[in-house]
Length: 442
Image 1 (cartoon, rainbow, N blue to C red):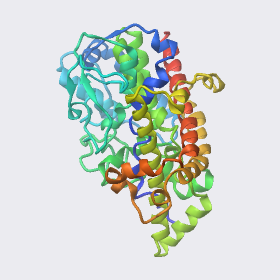
Image 2: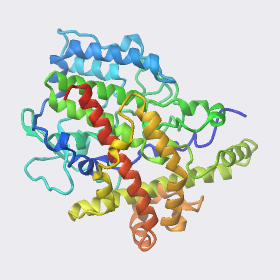
Image 3: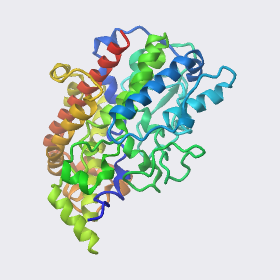
Image 4: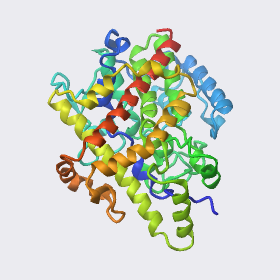
């Protein structure tokens, strides 16, 4: 059987896991003592941090690359030409560009000075900031992100910096980094090779291998679809996390909290079962069968399965976002907010380590996949989650209100499942942050 397996063409539609991370992160961290009691930090442009710590950053990135080559399965080595080296003579713009190349982030990454304000708290003291100033990705219809500008030198709460940054990797950091993506960096290229899954012609989908981790599909699946194992979520966690530690240790607290949020985004993505499993609602046998039929000239069942998984993912994300935002705007607490704040589960997991993302977070989400998928099917109107001929993603803007209305009286099982997933989201986010703070000696 060819190594072209299920979902290869349509996974880009699933590139985002939880919609807007920031409102959830405000709730997850607001009662964590290490965050709630932290002193305000001084806002600092990225170039100031890069200029002040150029040699230390160079050593950190070299150490990260050496570690990744030794420990990360499927790691794509960074080309030597991208290595970050200290050079006091270059301009700030050149230093910033060299930093992005060394991390192998999109050259269009903004890393602006901004906050995404807690939707519970209207912030009229700072000027609104257009999304294009913060993100290289255009806001979709119904986007809930609202940005305000920060000024260098002003004091800001670490909670706001952290929660804002937890959503930031979805703002274009990982777009078009593979050799077969339009506009991919070249001369030198980034060394990631061809996009391992998803359609390389769809820009937003090119970030999927940095935000998903199919680590627990099993030996048979991995043999049939080896490219699915090539994901770079762990790399991003290590890169951003190491920079957070360095920033805290060298007196750049703003960037400590900012880089920590960037790292935790990728941890949080893997708490979403549709990001830790290729098809949570299908058995391996069924996937193999529909794939074989497609290769024999009958692709309808495979296409239908792809659409159903995509629809269920979007329905889950739609409701999670709607519930969180509605409660925030009304300053109301419900099961999801209580779950996000629940610290009781934190200590039941192993201590934070480089293997935590794969062995704890992704494994737990993969195991929850069938239960989550079943809850979506029970909790949502049938036409949105059981009709393979209906593409919810293409109609989300038009049908979101209808979906919300028709869920009334049917959603309790789904609400319970989402609450459990967000309990894990909160615990893993806090455990990751504790691990980084401990490494920094905080």
